[in-house]
Image (tube, rainbow, N blue to C red; front, side, top):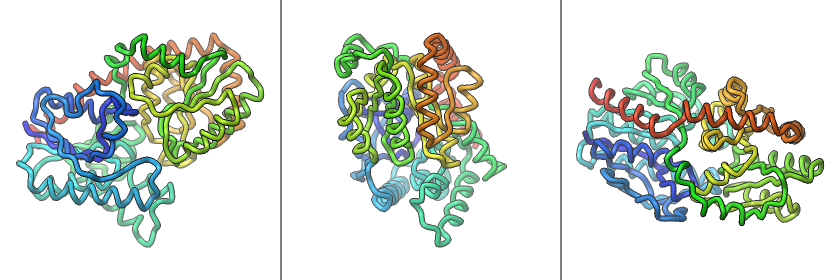
Length: 400
């Protein structure tokens, strides 16, 4: 079968990201002819060459469309529309695929996939990785002037036009069902590459130790985007308060993005706050494995409660319990499985107090870590999730 994937954001595990789009392309490429329509934006973030940029069975079509997390809202919108226009044009000219997968973010990438599918009479699968347009609207990136209503109408129309919608969390699935009740929807979580985790070697672990020169008992970690939605100022303020009460904790931030300067200033002002640059994914997994506790934080926006951040799955997979600030499915999950804790979003005082209490009880911390590893192996093995995803795509093509 010929499958086309419309992915504005495509990267390998050699980049500082969990690389689920790569895992999907690689899995489909085992049995089908796959074309990924993407950009070159992430290639410059590649830090190693362990993984081929195009897996076997996969052809890449790459446009020169810039993007990075520090862009302003107008710059991001320009990038999104530029990719969508070029993807649409290429999709109408390329050899006819049997099925198309269009992935958001952003919604414009999925819209291009949906338009090609409609114009060429091809079934398509809409992968929802973030809820658009709710996310940019609630972040204040899209002025109204009637645009909000138009974008919500377009979102619902895209859901209805897809033969299948795939979401990354149960809260996302509920959102899609509410917007388009007749649409076929299935949740397939982000997951973690356990094969990659098993390959994290002594070299990566040694490098992590050398980077930190750890002289404190506990390591609290935030690893991921320093984006506007990730509430880094809250984490930095909480770290300062925690470190004023404890001398046995190191708080590390690994990543880059909009709030990089905030994190850098904090690291320069406090020896127990460290900033690491973005690391290739295997080394990020080694960092999670070394941490005692990890942080998964977002601003207090309703749409963000539905998020399915890769760092959440990776932390659980390494046996590192998490503190989440999303009052949605991750809050329910850590409580149900005793693998973490919830703190209200944008509350540095509450977060600092919670971290102090958690670290004061090493037996509880260890028990949560064991529970995290157990539930992650049972629920979030990416190889099994990608097998399910591939089977769903094949059924969709056969029955559409």
